[in-house]
Image 1: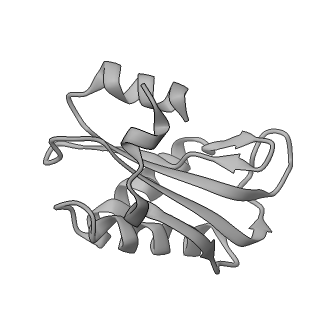
Image 2 (image 1 turned 135 degrees about the vertical axis):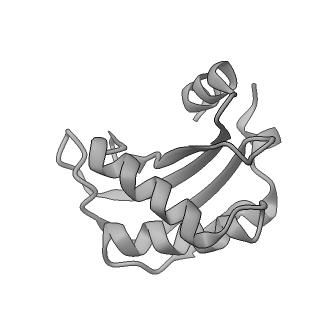
Image 3 (image 1 turned 180 degrees about the vertical axis):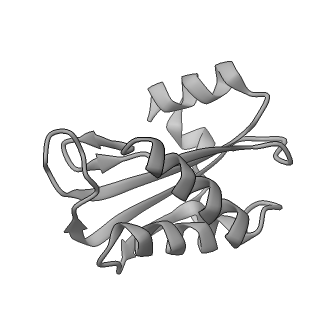
Length: 119
């Protein structure tokens, strides 16, 4: 699996202006909604619930907020580089400036895990 095949150019945000974790999730949800058949509200709701379970900050400034959706047929990724690093609650305590948003079909267990590993 190659990240380039999963990440179309229109899913890359080179300069995302956000000051909080919530704002990052809202802006990424809005962008993702333009790329798939999900609503911004649905995406944001699933991401927020996932973050409440546990932080998706992976360390070294990288975060992978993710969610699974019954109505999706394919995996979608959005990548953003934050203009200003923010606290995402990562275990290493480092602020996040690189965010990969991963939206997966609910039935895509293996593909979801392979994509997380690729990221």
